[in-house]
Length: 118
Image 1 (spheres, rainbow, N blue to C red):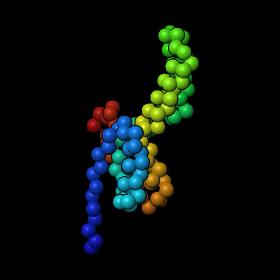
Image 2: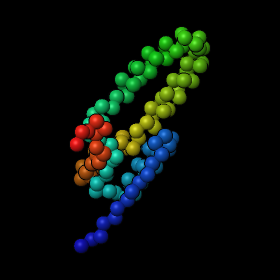
Image 3: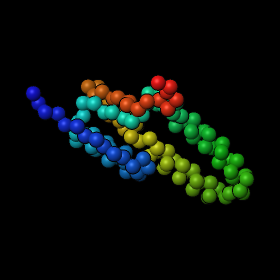
Image 4: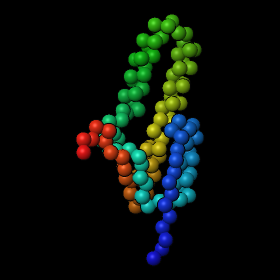
């Protein structure tokens, strides 16, 4: 019987290079199962990128008027938001993408729902 390895990977949620690091690790390790600390219920509740972007643009417009921001300031804020959006939840996105590209890999969500009453 072949011995199996178990890897426990800790991530820094706002690591700007986290996505690339995790992707490289998955490519190197070639896991059979990826377990993500997230409940399936919460996955379904995450806003789509398009919804977040639309909501952000609406909020930025209100902020621009309230604080009399210049177009350059608005562009800087938008760039920071886009950067944050790219690294937000990368652990889930990279894991889902890897499992989709490797159909033999099982993706398991191993957290309980926050509002679970068990």
